[in-house]
Amino acid sequence: MNTFYLKERLNKKYIFPIEEKINYFPLDFITLYKNIKSHFNNTIFFSIRQQNQITTIVAVEPKIITLGNRITQHSLIQINKLFNNLKNKWNNKISIELIDGKTTNSSYKELLEKKGNYQTTFTGGLFFYAGFNTFNNYLTEQNKTINPKKVPTYALLFVDSAYEIALSKKKISIIHAIFSSKESLSHEINQTKKKTDILKKILYQSQKTDKSKNSIYQDNYIRNNININSVLNEDIKNSLRKKIIDAKNSITQKYLKQVNISLNVKFKYTKELSNVYQFLLEKYCASYVFLYDINNMTFTGSSPEMLVKKEGKTCTIEPLSGSFPVSTNQELDKTYESQLLTSTKEKQEHNEIINEVKKDLKKVCKINTVIIHDKREILKLPYVQHLSTRISGEIKQDYSCFDLIRNCFPPIAITGVPRNQAINIIEEIEENKRITYGGGLGLIDFKGNCNIGVLIRTYHKHNKNQISLQVGSKISSGSNVEDEKEEIITKTKNLLKLLNEVKM
Image (cartoon, rainbow, N blue to C red; front, side, top):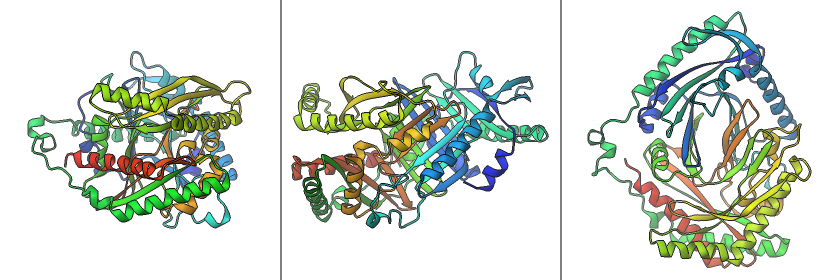
């Protein structure tokens, strides 16, 4: 936590914004990514879908506050202190000159809440990435070697320059947050205006061109050619079958209810993951679509699952379970939906997860405020459908987003029931240690709100020519080994086929 950036910036008294709105024009996100990378080293694209509206936050060169391999109770206290310090500065008032030349005496909070007809959803804050083992105090001693390649397991990043792209409202905002003292205010405003000019130029250079003139939109575009049968060969299938059998035996011996077992495959892939991100955003947009590129760690994906969400005092989790296919045949699709809703096995597994999530929330929420909403619902995606239930509660007064995340992490649906015992079985059975899979990525703003998605259906870039994909399924004592194996193989095939659809 003692980085030079953090020490220097927290001596400054103020955080304040410079913001500019631009009328929306169709963006080519592939070109936008390339243009950002030509000027800056790091970026995060994070798209949130709510009620069929998609908002994308693009962090441009977010400042790394801390990278690490484990968040202990002590470091969690330090992170909360840091966040409270930032929130306090966010509320300090200062007389500042805005980009249009006007002067105002307001706090960062007040300025960004007075926006007229168009309200930006992100008013400054942090990106938080947490890999599967970020909070790994639950591991037994023999399983402590969690990260042999020393890949950062978590990252906390301050977003001081960002685009907010509201596709449905056809608006783009450029937002900057500056740490400053009064003495350096004028200089830092001028520097930020220069950066704004660069960001505007990048935007205008990233407009979509006429499809007929842009090769990536032509009908004869080159497809990827991943050999799916080669990736999912018999050795891979036999290894997966053994893991499922081992998991079933462990469940019986150690009195578990369920455990999530995953398959990790690596394969050749030479295109930029920005191509995949744009394709997911346009064709397979789930609740969260993301592209993370920080310090040469790069991954992209489209996740339907929420880890946690906090708005004001209300915190929410929407766990998913069950995976049934979808069909373009309406009658067949209804049959799949009915089977998912009436399956005794799926109902039991989903109820077990709901009960554990309720216990998680009770630890951080006020007494008698945790509610299970409505009945089970179907979340339908382009190639799969799941069971979903919303659970919410009112968070205790002294608890932050970080406390909420810590208490619900890793998500029950990606570990098992009970969580701690399931995690130790995962560590024993899976030969590839989980890094991003089952982790979380999302935004924490200076109001104390957060929206964190679960990192599943994620493509992780390892080098210029190789990426990996990890897919899992819940195993219980009543699971049929071949059925579970085929479910994981089918999920993996679908995600590999999706890559073969991405335009080169």
